[in-house]
Length: 449
Image 1 (cartoon, rainbow, N blue to C red):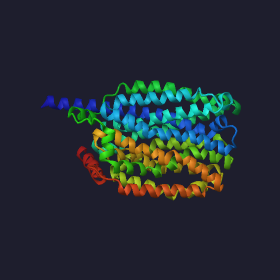
Image 2: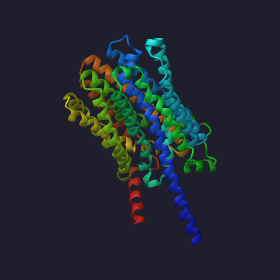
Image 3: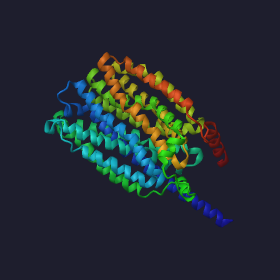
Image 4: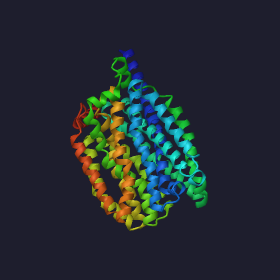
């Protein structure tokens, strides 16, 4: 009996150590991926228009820059399909190393892309190709990172465990914004426009080396190992999930409309709107974004944890409603140009985003079985990039260009929220019912007391 107890205790210690490694590796990996991805978005909003499309008026040049930005979102479902196949076939760990290298190399090379002044439109072409590779890398990253963390976690804490890789978004946003802010602070505008913007892209190489070191030390997830031991690995997981779970994929994509489309308006388009329309200093806007990203360190896991208590769908639905109700007040606060109110607008907008983003990973991943989960969750999640995240800055810029007002953009945000509420209602339920998750978590907590 004593031997058995000792063995069980050792097993729990080993599992706990591996869980911590998996969470750290997943979070660091997603941080690097999102640092790279957001870095491009910030540069597109501030500098790429005039460097790669200098013959256009400022707003048209920004639209063109956001066009190259959109290409990355097109690449994300492609990456989800490619890496999802291998993630369900050979495992989460090896696939995640490949996604990290794909994203890191593409971002590093962006630092060397010549401008229009040097090679004409070929600069924009090369930039677009590298942006596509970025999208493919991040498209394969999310599913594996979330699953590596969630599948190592206990059943009553999967919402919390799956929310930790989601921290890559605020941390990546914080790091990328901080690097741009640092360069604009220490360099003259001319130096930043000439070479300073390239430095943050170069530094991504260092982050990739750190990420590789951490990920190589993590074991494969226990749930995927069970699938392999049971010889239940699907030969063509991507085809299988398209045939067996089309509704889950579609609802996973459209449930993100209220989260992703407003998010890229809140962090990317706001830089263009604030600097060109409101004439707010770009460093001031970058500072506000830094504060909002820092708040996400708390809000993302907090709402993931709350979803374990009250249910994913309820928590997610609250976030959708709050985002819809804030669509008009958001621009109302921005348009005052008062520093404190602009800060409130940006911070609160990302808190409402985090109400959805915290529980989102578990909500989507639990819609699919373990043997097709990488492919299914990744595809559903990344399809939203094409219909929501990618077009959002373009649509917002086009509305602003044609109406000269933010009113249409607020209506666009509210429309996205209506679509998400419908998708949430139609989302098929599997074995993990929201109320069951909450009651199981409470029962497990009680049993330990």
